[in-house]
Length: 403
Image (cartoon, rainbow, N blue to C red; front, side, top):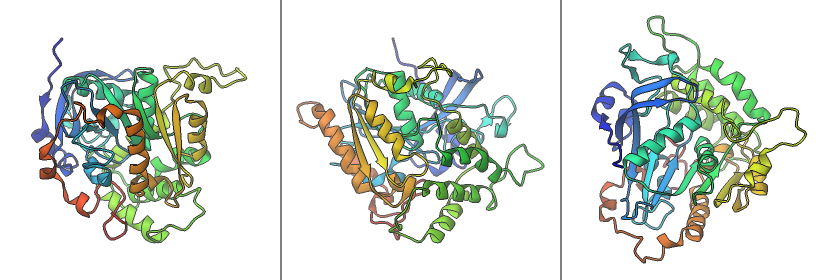
């Protein structure tokens, strides 16, 4: 069966979506139809992705990178120190792809996308999208590119939730996963707080002429501050790079300049409604035992779990639970004072853990016996971030962190 080919709408979307235009070198295609988990149907909608390296002849050397809540497809920007020859994301060995999640403003269908039925942005009318929807749409993109097998799915934060969902949906297919994740069940108090606090943070003021929430420093900025404060909730160590006040003020100002308020609400709803048991386990609320641990024990694919001790959002205890029940896993501890954002700051440690895992679980891509296809063009498109520039979608700054 011939792979579906989708219409390239990159230029059109860059003209109509200023956020999509912030991501250099990505491709945006139009998918004709997709039935969402909520029952609504998206038609003729955009999906953005960016790639590095080349798909090998067996079409199985794919590293799928899943970005965080406010990230983009531009891995070079927010995980640049992990991307390059000899690093975790090695384009001389792997075909590396990051697909922008639904609800994000950076190219895929979201509240800032023009609804062709109305000629206006979806705004708050954008339907509920889920992590399962994301991986379903990603599967369409991968199929269109001719991918036969994913070697490994890697993600942090919301990207980790997607990586775990891949294991649940495509279990026991030889898929490898590396992530730091949150279950979406039995939420810790810090996450429950976000469900009640963050949407209110960004819903004022409202544009009287358009059905859209406005970005402003009293809203989206304070929402980012709330997230940052909670991400450091378990932190009892001093931060190494900057003072707390500088960090909070900086993150708020940076965030309001690059994100859309409706999109933040949409993705927050995605996180708040995520449940890894949905569609996989029948839950009996009266049962004395939680069926989740037993179900996790049926997932035979290898997993790397990275737990951050100071993370107040995706708690270390949740990573330990995964480590206790996934049968083939490595639980690595990142003892960092940077809270949840450590996965976007402690690059050397993350790179070391992931490289060790890939070498152990994917030796065929490192023995140079035919799986490796040299990618000479790599050095031609290394961007300034890898050489010490500022991150647009991540946390690192050249004058604040050791790149």
